[in-house]
Image (cartoon, rainbow, N blue to C red):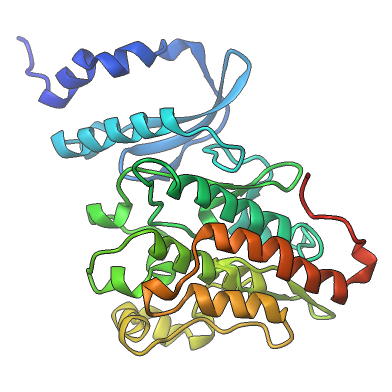
Length: 310
């Protein structure tokens, strides 16, 4: 007795694009236990012909015709992306974990400025594509850091999880007001998220280490989740939190003794008016000039060189 296969499986078999880039599953060597990720299934680290790769295993129970179209769009998008600050495979780890680990001594004068600039550069590349590619879920968990502390934007997809009714690890904390209100949003919504991610301060108990890019600047400067200082009762009341972000102008706290240039950039990035937010090209220039100048002035022992390869 034969069974009828779902139409999306037939589409996978017949799609010429997927057929052209497909490889035999047995040629992959899975190296890690799976972790849940995204709307399509679980994720594994693996190798293919001695190269490290990420394997997304499709879960048939989660797929339908609409999600299959999104999957194909994601494949086509990933085939177009080629930039040193865009990646799918983390090496050292993600920024969220590194900001909270005692193993890493991240500071604006030690790796952090480089990471912030790299992420802004990767986002500038996405926004300069034709048509522009919007991330729409930029947060510290989606910033991967390589073994030599190069920042890389990850989890670039054609459609954000929020548009599919899937909840992430609190992605709304990084969300621009216009997205919360369901209004049209563009590149400036990614700029807002960059600002939240860059301003999180880490208190080691002895010295303040400025780790800044959290809604990406806010989190880097405090090593805390955006709005974490509101207290657990308010954090659980997500509807109230979103209302205050969208209509009351609520923004994450900044480090008291942080860099003045980072605070100024953060303020511009999280403006309630999208047109007042800087472009990522402007952000890259500001980081490389104004923020770097203040870092050199406050931390002269860091040397007078640049924090990235010339």
